[in-house]
Structures are given as structure tokens and as C-alpha cells.
Image: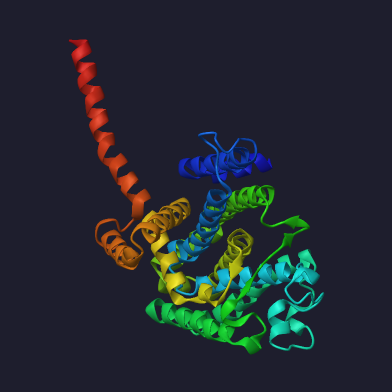
Length: 380
């Protein structure tokens, strides 16, 4: 019964995405761990970490698409939820260093010893326990999103005004986390991680495992999104996106639906941030930058808003382009990103998947006409 329900959630695009991700979750670790370095298909550890980072960004894009593509909430602050999940994971990883730090303090992270902190702040209590840290990965962004959404949606803040205040929220967090007295590493952030669940975070085996977990997490994010948007709840979200006033007029509590999907989306973004940190090896306040959130919007727009799979595809493609550009022409990347957004807005308003669907619709009548002509020729 469960298998049948899961299959019913998958349209062709989602089924292909799940199949590709499952294959990658198996093949990439094999190419890293089971092949010699001189083997043509051997995958170096840095490539695996890079691909894992792309998958984390894809989870963030799916989370954003859930609120923007299906509910019409253009959030320019989802980078804040991503960063909060990352900080929760980073705090756990810092507590695992113990006496192996520069100052060999079994309790305080190195930056606290350097700043003459005498005791561990209350905000750090419990982060030496993995289940508590994972709970905070969900609760930190979830509670913030719930509090922000409760105030904003019940005040009926919509459109560009909502986008501006979400951007203001993430900028405020950026400024707060830059301060050393906040107890989160200040400008330098959290880094020099050693272990995760007792395994060396730098080892090839751990990198392979983190990549596979990221691929599976992206599958779960797509399935959750598909479950929501194909349910009655999802139909109401689409109605709110297309005609919020009418939806409210016929009796739906619009603010409750918005609040629920916004909070869930923030928690998904937090999971993406938590998976991102051990693969990248650092988390700092730059992740709160409004530019990070704006880039996420571009990923969704490029792949296809309101498709989930397209959002993930856009995240992978744009970040691959960013990796290439920043390696070859770093000074031109921002210009290229801006040009990409303009071109997508003008010529691909439905993104890459929208273009593919359009091409399918145009070729379908032609193929039918061709079949009719062939049949008439055969009859003669």
C-alpha cells in the first residue's frame, strides 16, 4: 500500500529524478572507494564533496520552490534557514573536537578560549549529543519561520513587501552572527571539524556516505513536495497563489496554509544546511548574505518554478556554471548570473522544464500528422 502511494506521487519527471539520484547514491561512492586513482572513471574526493554541495543546494531550491512555485510566497530569506541548520550541525561538529583543538580545551571551542570565555554558553548546551543537534537543525529554522510567518501572514503582508522583509530578516541575522559576543565564531564562523558520529569527516568513506545521504535527502524532499502539492492541501496552496482573495472569500484560512508550508519549507532548508557543512568544512555568517537567498531564487527560476524537480535541476546547473566561471573568469561571474536571470525572465519564464514541455507540445501534432500521412500512403 505504501509503495503504491509513493509511486502515485511520481510523475515522469519526478520518477526520472529519483532514479538518477538513487543511481548516483550508489555509483559515486563506488567510483570513489572501489576504483584505483588511475582508473578513467575514478572520482576524486574533492569532486564528490563538490557534487554533495550541489545536492544540498538542490534541497534548498526544492524547499524554496514549495513556497514560491506553489504558494506564491517569494522568499528572499531562505538562506537564513539554510544557515541556521548549518550552524546547528557546525556546533555539534565543534563539540566533537574536544582536546584535539589548538588550545586542547575539552569543553570550549578554540575561538571561545581565544576570546577568554570562561564557560560554555547556554546556547551550546546539548550539542555534544547528535540527536539533540539534529532536533535543533529542524527547530532553529522552523521556530524562526513560524514566528516570522505568524506575524507576517496574519498581518496580510504579501507580494514585494513580504519579499523585502524576508531579506531584511536574513540581513539582520548576518549582522548578529558577525558579532563575537553572540558566541558563534564571529566573522570566522565554525571550522576545523574532526569527526561526525565518530568517523573522520575528511576520510573518503565519510565523504561518500555524506554524498549518498544528501542524494537520499533530496529524494525525500521531492517526495514530500509531491505529496503536498498533489493533495487537497496542495490544491489550496495553488489557489492561494493564483487568487488569494477569492480563496479567502470562500472560507479558507489562508494565513494558516501559508504558515504551515512556510515553516515546513524552512525546516527542509535547515536540513540542506546541516548536510552542507560537513561536506564543505566551514560555516560562517556569509551564508546569511541576502545574495545567497537571491541566488536560490535564480536557481528555481532557471530550472522551472512550480516543478520541484526543475528547481533541483536549476540549482545543480547554475552552481556547476558558477564553479566553472569562478575558476576560469571569476570577475565575470556576477555579470553572467545577472544576465542569466534577465534572459530567463524574458525568454524562459517557465524555466528549462517549461521549455521542454513547450517543445513537446509543438512536436506532438507534427508527429500525429506524420502518422496520418504514412497511413494514407500505405492504404494507397
